[in-house]
Image 1 (spheres, helix red, strand yellow):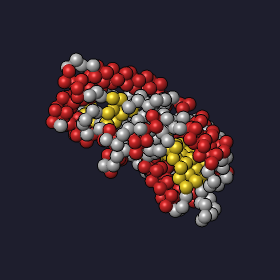
Image 2 (spheres, helix red, strand yellow):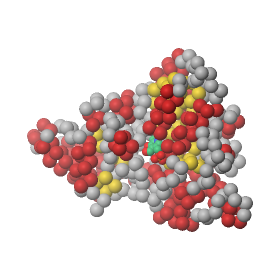
Image 3 (tube, helix red, strand yellow):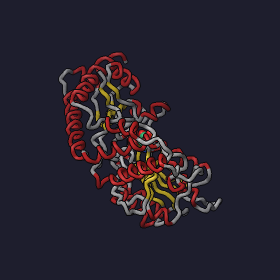
Image 4 (tube, protein in one colour):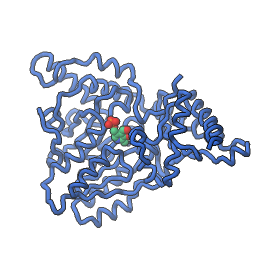
Length: 404
Ligand code: PLP
């Protein structure tokens, strides 16, 4: 039996999301014949469905661009913003991110850094975006800020960043900067008004389909009317001009339709999902507390499990747990052998076998950042999944620490 507790890495497509793949018209939405117009209508409908979940109205002049994934959306937002500016080789511009952004935003920023851009990173110690430091950066930077991008929810700690306040600071000091929110982990997990680009003041926003129980192969980038009017975004992949010229390539309609089906389901049942996850989180926290309070003196000596709970607001779906004296990889393999799937940091950093930048930015010492597992769950998980994990952790502590 599998206990899948890695929902932040990817999710199992729902039945409706799978059905949407096979039901989607296979024609090319750009073709002018009947098969094409049928596909174009399905694409339009999917766009409206996903757009509605963000608060977009039918008459909105903002656009929802379909991409292939969250990574592509983040790249288009940042590199497309940089490409839209007339470049002054002596001072090409400044980009502001948070420390520990997902590699899909951090790495394109490094690319720009190599080309002479200034990249400023706002500290996130304790899981909080340091707004005081951000304001200082904005006030002191000598180079014009072209882009400020912050994730809504950190994918490793679950910290919910106050991007709304951050964006309003950015707009106050640098009204021309594009404010970008990577909402991949917060979309359809937080209450509606907390991931809407309108509520947050985001000019652009990234979403990813496979994190919300759709099949892989689709993502989206919300682009505000403000950005479009000012021509603050230029295509980074020129081609046939699909998606208003901002993301060329024939649209992946089966994945997009699946995305829309999963988004509609998630939006309709959001409140119920949030309360279900909150109950699972309470069970996990209570279980960890009770493991820590076991009376066995040997147990006490071995050290305690610790939930790396952000100081401010956090998403119940993601729990970062420090395991005293056990390497993440060892614990992961131990748990995996029992059918329990968690991850060490994020799936991406685990593959690169690097210390997690997000956990270091959170404030964990280097050696401790190696002894953390990320448990991520959602409404599809059960109490049994949580209990299996707690049993697994008890046995892991008993047997792995003994071997040290
Ligand atoms: N941004 C965040 C915060 C993520 O957690 C992820 C994936 O884990 C991505 C972006 C990238 O999304 P995708 O896997 O769709 O490229």
